[in-house]
Image 1 (cartoon, one colour):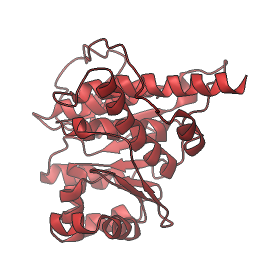
Image 2: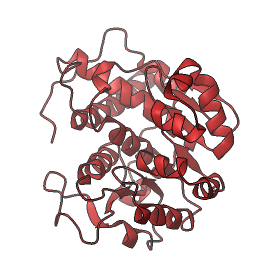
Image 3: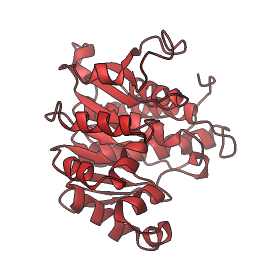
Length: 301
């Protein structure tokens, strides 16, 4: 669990611009809200030895406002009876979670592994709950890169978000990482077109491309995000926004902005860039989301 930090906004931080760009994300809650109002997310991944990826994504989703979160581990039995630091998160095996019909969105791939059983699980994901948004990250993307039939199934999924880093993007496109990095805009557009998905090409100034070709370049963030588990946190943040009903392109753009802006807040607060931990990002993003909404309400008075 992250340490207690007194958060500070960087000088000249663009709160009002964020409200205008991401209105669904910075909408105040209604007083009669309940946990069902803000959706249920399932995070599927966490093969043996990689359970932490699911914990990071699940806890981040909860801290960014999702009503309920399931952590689904791709293991025969649960690796733990509960997540001690986050007892609010519900646990099950990934295969059991596929049978649930009350999910608002799903995230798959964090620590999933690339074994044949993982590919079978991912194929089952595509065949269930197709009326809900699905985010694919990490090993889910690697599985698509090595299985054309599986990739074709992914491209048929109605509400799909992909979040590759440059090396994963290169595998999906059958090219080299250096080629992706030399023309990031072309790479992200090709992926969005191929998979008919919202695609986040992570990295310095992450790019988000919508199914319709709309492009967003993110300017928040710093090198503190170059830390293990940072991508899992981003998946949890975007997944949380999807479960809360934010449309996929805005959820991806706003999630990327919050993820990077949280790192900027942490740097301004004396945490990082060096040594910033992935588990410190979501608490700062939670504070920032609430602070931005509070600022919006003050300006409207």
